[in-house]
Figure 1 (cartoon, one colour):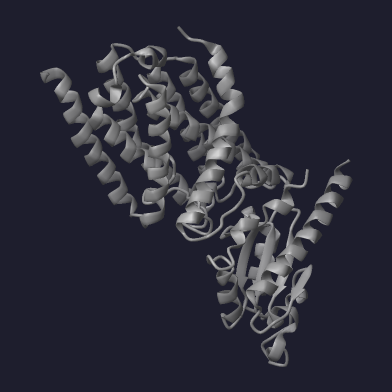
Figure 2 (cartoon, helix red, strand yellow):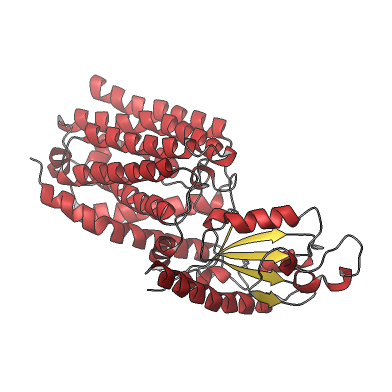
Length: 282
Length: 145
């Protein structure tokens, strides 16, 4: 059931795809703002540069925690693409973010502390939705295994439209896009210095970036599952979802953390619970 | 590979500038000049920055702050003094509360005079700074070996 060759493929290909997506993201963002924008490969230049810089850190332990962040993101992504248990994927993903939070807490900088607290709020906000996604897939297919969900011939999007809408809403926060980028933002010079990544520099910051590429590919993979019955539709849907996220990012100001948390929980409750209730009634 | 030249991140600090040069720095980020097409990003965090762009002159109040920002930046790093005040103190150099240009506190690599500096000059200065940055990186690598 679990085919590790896909997991290994994820390990190698995801940073390439994730980096390209990040580059295209910045380009589209620039075009939306009437600018030319950086080259498509800019994210690779950035990370390459970060690995050339001096390794400056407050505590040596912070580098270890960020390594843990990267390793667990890779593990959860590899497990997902190998067709493993969706619940385990989600818990490993959460654990990886806990490593990021602990890393930010360990440096005792006020900016990193606020960022860490906000990262925890993000986890709290998004976690119910992500778990309900897996519950929805289970009710639709009778299995938590990604391989079973992937090979299902039923169009998941028609069975789980509410869950998909809730997931799309939470995806804005997961991809660190406005209006929900409260912990740290892609855009420079914003949000309490740099939030959770304030005290990371050089190769450690590079690892945070690479982890984000892996995570973006994993999240787009989860989006794919909703359309997995038809690959052509799936590619179109994933592209459309990402462009919609860029559009939302560029047209919304950041909200306060309280509103972010409440609105995601309300959307989760209304859309996905209604969707799940439909399974029991219908 | 020299990725450093393709992705210079800037931290901008207003020492005691009249805000003229600072407005020109921000003008560089607008669609008209769009420095992001060279990979230049204006970060707010010295720990992420490669180029320290500093405006205004040095006085007793900002001496510590300038030093602090400079010390927090990881190597290799360059300093670009933006505007005549940052280069030499400008018209304020004779004032009793002004010490002079930025080179009184930190080593300055690129001087970009002007009152205020034009965005074209800023871009030209930053490109010059990239050359210095690359030299420093090469030196750093030699030291390591």
